[in-house]
Length: 270
Ligand code: DGL
Image 1 (cartoon, rainbow, N blue to C red):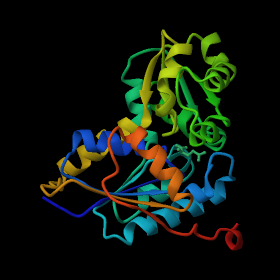
Image 2 (image 1 turned 45 degrees about the vertical axis):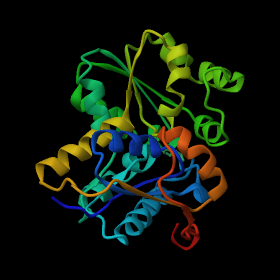
Image 3 (image 1 turned 120 degrees about the vertical axis):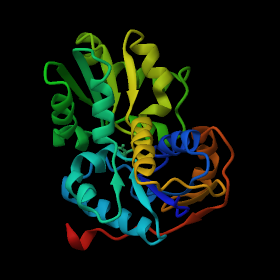
Image 4 (image 1 turned 60 degrees about the horizontal axis):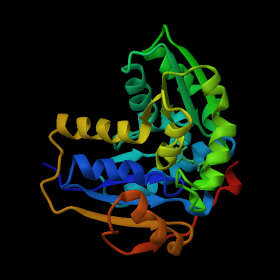
């Protein structure tokens, strides 16, 4: 047993989809969540900035004495794979768990959607091909999804959501993709709208897959918690926005106050 917290981070609220799954499958864990909303979106930033952000966010989480970290962000997972893999505190990303679960569907026409910087890295495509070498992979960047979601447009009935989903995902419909990886943790939030547009496609959430990978790691290392369920939340952006949207994404009320922490500086280093 290990009752130390798990640190989870993302650019904003998208990583809460991973927290929701962590909570569902491991009810006794203490989770510390950091949404870097002050620097969101990550998805159009250059790779070197993303790598710097990865190091900063890991350091932030480690400041709480965490037993493990979940980088609940496709952009970081695909551009800083080596940084996560080599970190002393075990750091699980969404890339490998997501690609593996997509391949496990057994379909041969696969797709992945993620941020522009994620798709540009080629990491999702490579990881999917590693697990499913015979599959044809269609990769599509969705630069409009995260700003739309963070501004509260999430419902399948929302006209903007429908329009943006249809105009962005058309290549996947054309390719008759059978299973699609949601390679950005924000995208699970609009899964219903994606499903409406691609009704014959099986959706695989990288956020959910990463939560399951975390559970496997904690189980294998006998590090699950038997303590009280607890959550703490930090944001580098608007506390008010976090408080109003987060319960919708989590599916339950926030378990503590949301605290502001200033965005870490980037400019000197890139
Ligand atoms: N949710 C993150 C991801 O999985 C970041 C999205 C963004 O900030 O652009 O990629």
